Length: 113
Length: 109
Image (spheres, rainbow over the protein chains, first blue to last red):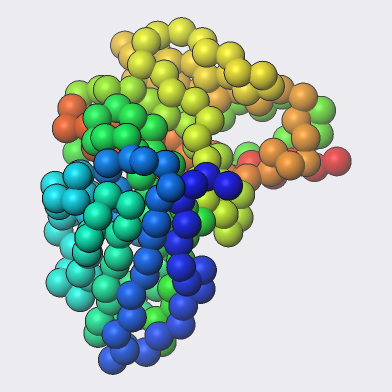
């Protein structure tokens, strides 16, 4: 138990669907992250929030839309995805965005048909 | 560009020792992390090195040489449960983690 939970754990969606991924951290951290993990590739940082404010958007397509209502919750809204977006989406949190260790959730395995 | 290199896969025997290497080229350096990730699970933090030298934590040790852009993770007395992917990541000058693709470690009886 790392203190970071994600739901759903698995998601299958069509290219025209709209869905949302949820992340919650119970560690009292101020920074939260979305990563994409594809097979045999490095983790790709997608978004960073620090104190609810977005501080990084690594050229992520607009079909991915993050939302951070408070420091404990992070969402990733998905719409009109492509099959190449199929991957493991990991959420992480850290005390802040400096050198602090990031703690990961178990991820959502997303399949886009 | 920024780059982290680590072997794709390694095989070792239960009870033995294995060393997983990581070399990096990044814009600045604010520390190097090692994570363990079992299949279908979250990456979990193993170690953090920011100064040169060896950090020991039980069966696991991590070494850093900043001048060589090199680190290794040493696993001793291997157990079957150590079968996992090991991820190397470097924090650059912007405090962003740059990740390697991971090393899949297979432990055989």
